Image 1 (cartoon, rainbow, N blue to C red):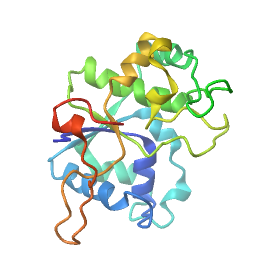
Image 2: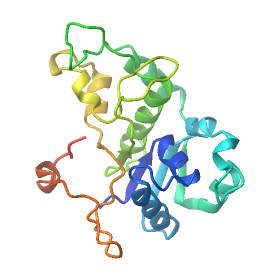
Image 3: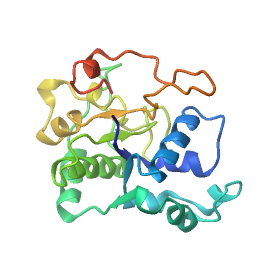
Image 4: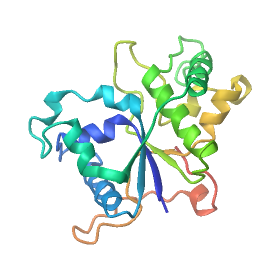
Length: 209
């Protein structure tokens, strides 16, 4: 049950900045504690290392990114993108998206870091044999970066109607992608952290992204 996670950089940043009021912070902290106790593994793309700025550690229990990953130890497993993964990123980003809210309007591009994260998660699943890996992210396409609003990780499949999907897009659509919601109720505070019943997950199918 969520033994192997692949984390987008936004989860690490939310944790190290100690943003306790942010959505899913308590869930993220629980996942970190369990990973440090060897109950789970957290994979990540080394591209995420470039997204940490020293200011994120101003109010953190960690002095730097090195301190954080030293503390995590073997609980975090880095995946360095190989040339084949990066070629896959190029192929994925070449696919044309369709805005689900305005099919005749302009689509969005896939941000390069997001594409690297998704293709690296697929590499962990298909090449490394981590069949049950789940990509965790909070990216629902609401923010705006230097490339403007981009195709989100959560809800990715909505931007690619089945008839238009390339092989790379189909691979990403087959990848389990979820928000970082802990599957077990928090008995201490009485919160059920995963209140939505997912019939697909109950049937052993891919959960709804």
